[in-house]
Image (cartoon, rainbow, N blue to C red; front, side):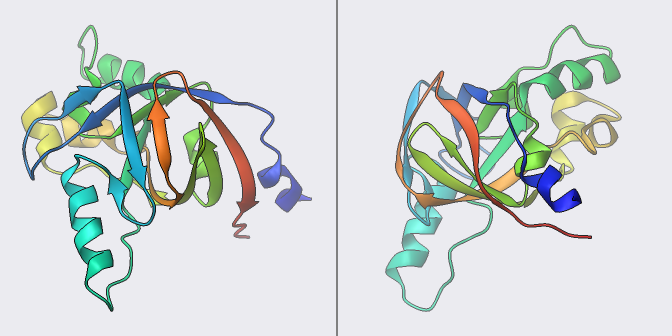
Length: 174
């Protein structure tokens, strides 16, 4: 019964923001579309470039953290916790911001954003940089609100306003 509940996701979401990190510790660059590379990451993102290198050199497994996603609704929660009017998505260093669907429900599932197939691989925990960008308490404010990580199973082009939907299967843990 609980397994059926995990697999039931009647809601869809929407991709509302995208950002790429051209190099480690560099600021994110906001984009309106981006190529998602199968088993590698996003074109123009330093993680995607590393993923391509891993694919080209035999014997290295694709990363489970090719793309990071955060829920737009959590930006409001973080702003309130940090006593700010708003939090800009680029500060949180996540690639994709979606709204209207519970990302945690996609954490161990296959889902599509537009025509790109993803597999949720786990939680995207905050790093110590959250203290730098959000201020004192930023790390703890992000705990539980950091989003998820995913790998790209089938690449394609992501566009703002693409629909986010569960396609299954969901890994069920009792």
